[in-house]
Length: 110
Image 1 (cartoon, helix red, strand yellow):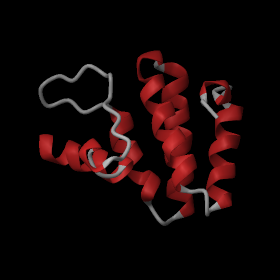
Image 2 (spheres, one colour; image 1 turned 60 degrees about the horizontal axis):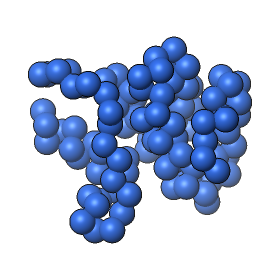
Image 3 (cartoon, helix red, strand yellow; image 1 turned 60 degrees about the vertical axis):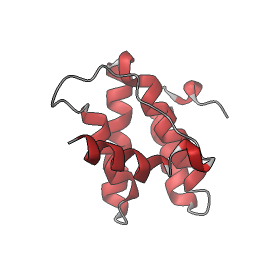
Image 4 (cartoon, one colour; image 1 turned 90 degrees about the vertical axis):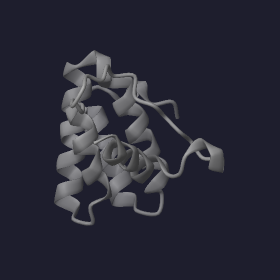
């Protein structure tokens, strides 16, 4: 289970900090056998299907809006996606529009 979570983080955020890349650790409280839902949803941000990607962004925005304890982690994930998808303007635009629609755009650092 731990290995699956670790590989998920590496998939979303890239290699570990030893390689010089960004390494973000979730601040969410972890219980034995519990993975926050937003981490499972975040896996679909790399899906090639645009509709799956859009559903993931939408669901992450809803969770960030309703669960303040996960907001920082979700915004960090979406910020990294904005950087990762710079060469895919449709995805970048969708993320920005979803954040504006949920009144979360002021949490972005850029």
